[in-house]
Each structure stands twice: as C-alpha cells, then as structure tokens.
Picture 1 (cartoon, helix red, strand yellow):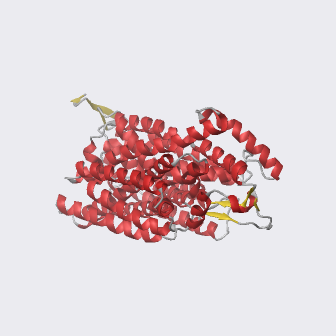
Picture 2 (cartoon, helix red, strand yellow):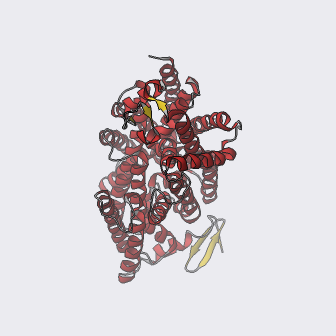
Picture 3 (cartoon, one colour):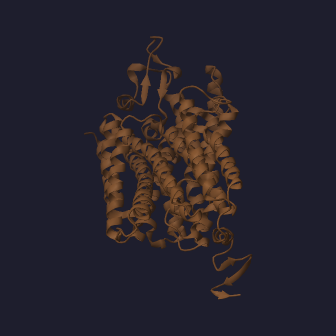
Length: 553
C-alpha cells in the first residue's frame, strides 16, 4: 500500500471515528430525539447541518465534473439548487415549522385530516429518499474504489456498512451534530485544492477572482481545437432543457422531505427562517467554488495531459482507468493522447483534481475524507427520513397507534438497515451518473409534493381529495416522463432531469380543479391554514387575531 493510500485511509478512518463518536454521544433516547432532535438545535448550527445535509455526493463529487463537461449549461445545477432554498425559506419552512409536526407526511395527513393522503405521501417520501440515497452510495463507492484501486461497486459495499451504523445509532439528534462536523470537513477539503490550483495557474490564492481569466484561455484552446467554446451558452443542451432543469431543481429543493425536516429541529418560526439564511451562506461557499473547480481542472487537463505521449502519462491515470471512470484511447494510433481521446467521467473530476494538479498526498487524502463526509452526511439525513416515514407515519400513525417509544425506535432503526442494504444493491450498478440520479429525486419531490405543500400552506380551500389526486398524478407523471425520456421520447428537447417542469404544473392544476370540484375542508382546517401566516405569538380564529402572547384579545 503506497503512502497516498495510507494517508487517505488514515484521514477517512479518523473522520469516521469522529462521526460515530458524535452519534454515540448524542444518541437518540426518545422518539423526539430520533425524528426532530427534540427541536433544540440553535439556528446557526442547524444552518450548518443543513449545509452538510445538502452538500451531497452530487454537489461535492458530481457538480464540478458536470460543469466541466457542460460549461455554461452546467450552471443550471448551481442556480437551481441555490434558488430552491430561497423558495423553501420564504414560502414553506417557517409555516411548516409552526404547524409543529415531525415529518412531511404527518403535515399532509393532519393538514387535510386524511389517512390516505398520509399513506400516499409517506410512500412517495420513501421513493424520493431511496432514489436520492442511491446517488450518495454511488459517491462513496467512487471514493473508496479509488483508494483501494478497486471497482467502485466494492467501495459502495463498504460505504453501506458505515452509513448504516451511525444513522441507526444516533437518529436525527446524532445525525444533526454529525452533519455539522461533516460540513466543516467537506468545505475545508473542497476549497483547499482550488486555492492551490489558483496559485499554480495564476499566482493568486483567490480562485473566485481568477478563474474568469482561465475560462477565457480555455475558450481560446477550444477554438484552436474546433470545439464549442466552454462558456458558450446552450452549446451542450437546448434552452428548453436548461430552463426545465433549473425549474426542476428549484421546486425539488423546496419540496425535498429530508431537507424540510431539518427546519423541524429548531424551536420557533424565527429560528427556522434564520436556519435558512445561515444555510444559504454555508452552501454558497461550495457552490461559488464549483465553477472555479471545473475551470481549473479542465485547463490543467487540456494543457498538461492532452498532447502528451501515451507512454509518459502520470501514474494517477492508470489508477483512475482501473475504476472505470477514465478512458484513454489512441484512436489515430500516433502514440499521442489528444483531447478528443480523453473520456473523463463527471464523478471523478473533484476526486482526481488533487492528483492531476500534483497537490500532494495530504490534500488528496483530505479531499477523499471530504467526499466521504458529503456522501455520508446526506445519506444519514435521507435514512432518517425513510425511517420516520415508515416507523412514524405508517407504523405508528396508521398501523399501531398504541406502540411504545421503544417499539417506534426499533421500527425506525430496522427500516434504516433495510433501506441501506436495498439501496446499496441498486447502487452497485447505478442507473446513471450521480448528478443525474439526484436530479431524478428532485423531479420526483417537486412533481409530487411542491404544489400540495404550497397550496396546503397558502390556500385554505385546498382539500384532501385535491391533495391525493395531485400527489398521485404528479408522481405518476414524473415517473412516466423520466422513463420516456430515458427511452428517447422527449417534449421540446426536455431530458429526464428536467421532468419537473412537466409534472409540477400538471400536479398544481389537478389540485386546484379537484379541490374546487369537491367539498371544501372543515372550517377548523381552514382556520389552521390562516393561522400559519401569522407570527407564532398570534393565534388566528374566525377572521380575527384572538390571542397574542398567550393573552386573549
């Protein structure tokens, strides 16, 4: 085992030990600990935990690679994922927190006084979270596979075991504080390499200020090679696909159950809003860095690897070829590796960049530890969401309302283990690259939940029949379009990753039409909706504020 592998494994092992220790120290002893961390997380730490939860393998590993491959067109991921947090923070999170439930299915079930709506939303939550976690397990496979120089599928198996241990042990309370540590590790690991790359290429340690010049140089190289320029808009995708992907990621972000539940872990509406503000700040550090990562990586590959003799390539190329994520082919037989003969997998760019830039074994190991932190952090939150949907919304609320806390905790932990194993098997041969799989989860979340949550909070005439019809039609439309697009049948050039722009309007219209065509909800449910729009110290009833600060007006 070489020095690089030893250093990487040492850093990863140290961080794993830290995560498990945090989860054990903050282990769940009651159902409120397990599901919402007893609603006792301060906003700044909750914002950091949201950042850790959000900075998934797709963001850490896949996004920079996608931007490197797509150029301008890849920016839809940055804008969509960031913009969605604004929708969530201002339109949904404070109101959902005020309603005081533990999960998204519980909000839907109680808001519409409907157990069928609760069951459908719980099943949809499991489907969405399951799809998302496949991408995270695939990401862990990329990291571990590179460390051991083995196929990524074997690395996935190792990641499954680690994730199952700490998520089962700590519940939401343990996962929250683990995610704080994971965010700190992943953001340091992400930024350090681009600082060093910026110094190497431009002599300036601030990559956010220098990569624009590098992009211009890449454009000049592209023109020499006869390629579409890196920063040319819509060179790699249609305008319709760009807009569809942007929309899908925005509404999906604001409707993802595992993100929404993070806002349930604070004490007040105000704390929920501040959690969103802090989360945007922490997320911005990585999202503003991803385009720089992509530009520097592409520049170094084009100037230092392309054009080199095949027999004098750096040793790291062989290691990545073994993972299946890098393909090198001397198509013209001249012994020189041309740019067109290099096929770089999107999911290897961030992991390989420290090696490509020759940044040293410590930085390589740090990036590996950061990538694992990103994959594990999001996977932990997703597993808690799957667990709560089954153990709380299906088992406790529908099957066994008399279940003790211990039985509910056991049901939650068993569901985590089962979900991890099943998702791990699917991730052994993932159906797409990480960012693509994750985009499907966003399309499913937006297409199933966004109209129902938005109308459920802001339209008191929305009823159970409309919610049920909307969720079923939205989920069915999203799945149908994804499968159609994968088979080559698209509408206006919109690909599978932009399915939300089709399904969200269909869901929205279904909710409105069916609700207006059926009986309105009970008056107390309509009063609950009106009450959600007011600060927490006010209670709204029969058209007037009748209580403020606990004093009847």
